[in-house]
Length: 336
Image (cartoon, rainbow, N blue to C red; front, top):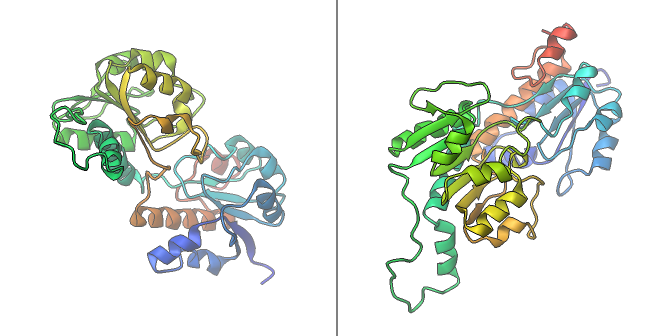
């Protein structure tokens, strides 16, 4: 139908629909003419720009760079919806100038991401990946059990410092309390959380056996964990990051591992994604690394896609999105 809005859907949603056993795009197909990326991999910037020439809506992933140039080159664009909580891959200022609401998916992935943060914490503390690789290489074959082999760090009774006390940081704190850990917390807003002792940033670094990062990537937090912060961390401590890669200076982190300042790290996010096989942290056996899988359970990814679809439908129909990352556009342009 010629009067239906045209939307472009980036890669992966149909594969997720197959896992869910139902078409997650069905509500959107009922409302709009959906053009879905069907090629292997993700669309290149040029391919994305070509599809956006006639699209009024965009359903994207965090691997799709939606910069000011793309937004300005999309004359009919009226709504953007990302299957992610973070929207640092989208130029919010450019979208807001155009009056384009940007949807995201907060809340639905909180518990799943906290699970992954704690999995990384446990794996790094108990040297699970090092020990597993030792076994797979056949190095244990014919050997004796050694009392000092792969000794790690206890969680029970240790101190966990949480940087960022939003929903995910709070969910990690609840898990830590179940392990009888002492929990310290710091947030830019000074938020107080039951069971978490709020402290200054430097105090948290100095006292924590484990530090888990849960702040958003904004200009104020980019490079927050750099040479100075890593040098202030307790010797032999472990750093976990499931937030955004740009928060941690990876060169400084590699040096902290190389020098023995840190006992290990657990990272699910990287400054440049995807991280290649030549990434410098891959060389460290005490680095537990995963490819941005914080929200990767079927149930959570399905809920994220469903919310993203609802956001896009609301946006192209001129209604308030259930979750909007730039709500000021709703007031400024009378969409609230």
